Amino acid sequence: MARLMNSIALTVLLTGIITAQSLQSCGTAQYDSTQYTCFNNATLCPIVQGNAYRACGNACFSTTQYTCINATSSFLCPIINGQATVGCGGTLCYPLDGTYT
Ligand SMILES: *[C@@H]1O[C@H](CO)[C@@H](O)[C@H](O)[C@H]1NC(C)=O
Ligand SMILES: *[C@@H]1O[C@H](CO)[C@@H](O)[C@H](O)[C@H]1NC(C)=O
Image: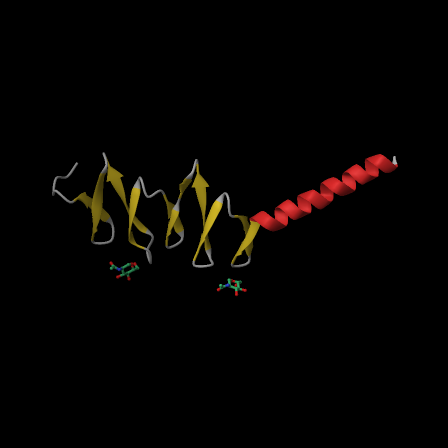
């Protein structure tokens, strides 16, 4: 019984150490820095399969799929077939070569 209690105590101790090392603060939230990135001490964005998403205002996006046009309004434009699109008027996105799809 004493051995079992020691084992539990050790597990709790080790878990506490591991948790303390990997958790960081983002504003009032705690996060695991191996799984999230904190932006402006406020917005947490996930790391998905090694791809660290970035913040566009309150929104998170993959830089391989989107470009942040306006962080204030979290306006994003998609990257289509490897080509970035640019924003127009705060709501529309169009390719730089001028072709609409
Ligand atoms: C982040 O936000 C928390 C909670 O609002 C605050 O206590 C802390 O000082 C901030 N840290 C920075 C680096 O601004
Ligand atoms: C970004 O969005 C905000 C809020 O909608 C707007 O007031 C501002 O003019 C926009 N900035 C640009 C550069 O379009």
